Image (cartoon, rainbow, N blue to C red; front, side, top):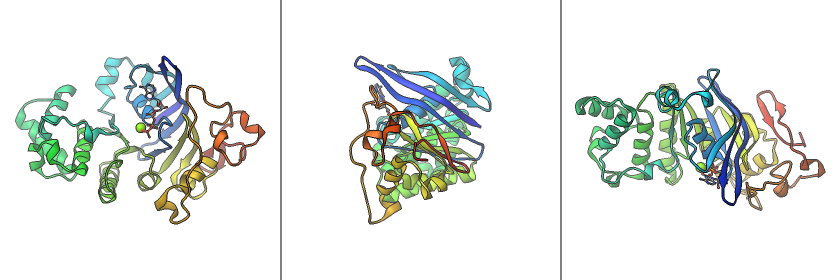
Length: 313
Ligand SMILES: Nc1ncnc2c1ncn2[C@@H]1O[C@H](COP(=O)(O)OP(=O)(O)OP(=O)(O)O)[C@@H](O)[C@H]1O
Ligand SMILES: [Mg+2]
């Protein structure tokens, strides 16, 4: 089980401290799939990068625990983490990965270089065999191995990025915006691929997306983030059917495929994370805000397996 407890990741910029992830907690049990949702800049990618221990300067993990089967990954030395956890147990398809493939490398060369980086390259024959097997896993034909990124469609490039993340047979895969920048048909194909990965290959998926439609198809649990905090968390069906936090309610109301005609948007914009409002961070945009919201709302149980942090609960 992967359990994140009170995770805090700050960026120490010259203009101040950006509290990008500010006390986030959740868990992913074996066989469970989590979706992380929220507007741009709310800290989704930073949360994923923290789990991979790949937060870069000026960012730093300043607090919390990341427990894998009870062991705090933040306490492991880098060497052990790199050898035993990163890519091997937990891997990540980075946001925009499909656009960061190297233009002068064929698909096979990407796999070869990645194998070398992980210290598992033996020889070209073995490496090609592994590459073709992984390509097949993500629905690409063997000939894709000898193609260059510019010869592939967006969806095919995303499949390559996903296959690269599967190289060391991870148990947990974090997919950061796996369908963004793809057209709707290709989006559906990638969602199906991820679905198959979790159902047939037993991978525990952590999908990060601003698209609740994508998340509802892939997640057993949902984590709704707003301005570095968790506003709602729990069983995906319950959160979507009975959202308790005004932010979640507005997010669902502004998702076309979930709501049809009565499309809404959320007025205002998220706060500056260098100087967020006191208490509930959604308060300045919340249609129901009252005096009490100047104090930070605790996570309260809405129903079994469903929590939200709002004073109205
Ligand atoms: N290298 C950095 N230096 C300073 N601030 C950063 C850095 N990287 C991210 N941030 C800030 O941290 C906050 C969270 O960023 P993050 O990329 O995690 O958001 P996100 O939810 O993934 O957004 P998006 O949906 O746009 O991908 C944002 O306010 C962002 O401006
Ligand atoms: Mg992001």
